[in-house]
Image (tube, rainbow, N blue to C red; front, side):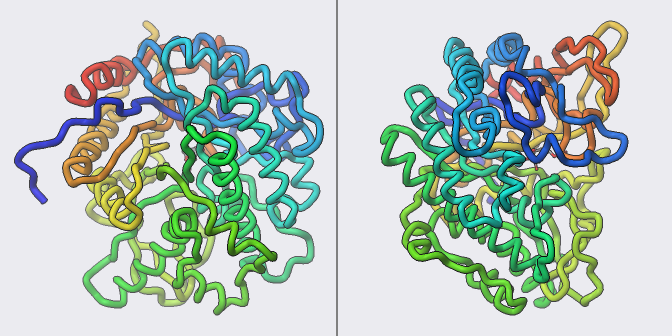
Length: 471
Ligand code: BGP
């Protein structure tokens, strides 16, 4: 569709950016916080641990002031479950509540709408010991946590996200440091999809509870969605792309929106003796949970060709790269796309295709909860960071949002990853994404001072012009 006239961004479009608690806060065991699975995992060799991160716990005022200077309308951050409930269940840590009260109030002081992710990769370690998402009780643990959040912050927080990238937890949990498989398990796929089922039920119940307790709030999921292309017009490749689209994307949104399992995924699980067990009431609970909007993270597309059985599951896998799944699809390096320094393909047009596809399937407003470019930024001697590559990446993606809006997609907001430099899921601090540079290295905390990157000034202009001025 080549449009002659572009529609503007909606008047109250939520421009902002994202972070997550375990990657940005630091203070990992301070003020009563219990450890999460991220604090006890073995970090990849050569990368920083998660004790200090960007130290936002102590510097949130400065950070929010910088976000306000950029003109943010929203800040997407996550709440650390084990800071609020150190054991995951049981006693609430008043200091944890106080921290998020302060953070929320600081945002509101500048008119920044908090967009709160309830769970971003950081299961309390105490609950890991009790089986994590494998344990059926995890549904109740999460619901109890959700209740504490709604009751403590619901008077001020209007926008909630349930679980960050549940699809990546399921597909590449070990890379993120989250997959907990009980000892002696003989069918890992079954166990993984049982965990996934518990998360789906927990999410549905949390959405229903949110609507019950906070009738004016809005809640949605936040999976990592990107359309899967077919490597060619060979029918076999098209079927493989459909397979991976179902497993990677639609399972999560079909369930969040319609409360049903995607049929392709179900048959794949049947084939591997891996269908999840439904507890009494699950079917109804899944149908009762309804999102008000769809949050989704987008970095790049995937491309699939027909499986030839040689794919090595898990090989080279992270959130955006995978070799394939035997019998399902084989990964294909798209020759039409350039890659980032970290090997992720760059595909702004695929972003538009993804928005169109999501909207035509679900007809709900969308907010982009992550999108961005990880790079080896350098602080110059005069304390500048020249990151034209990031500006170019973001510009091209924002252009596609405008085109998607013109296509008729309802877009609520855009929160690139990340507001400020933080620790990557598995590649340390050197893989930087922020508009704000944090003066630290992998193992040397240096000054921890904040510096405005070139992209900071650029994004400020974008927001001030409501997306008109992308130059
Ligand atoms: C998403 C996660 C984030 C974030 C981002 C960038 O998958 O939700 O937590 O880290 O990817 O990924 P990475 O840190 O691996 O570069």
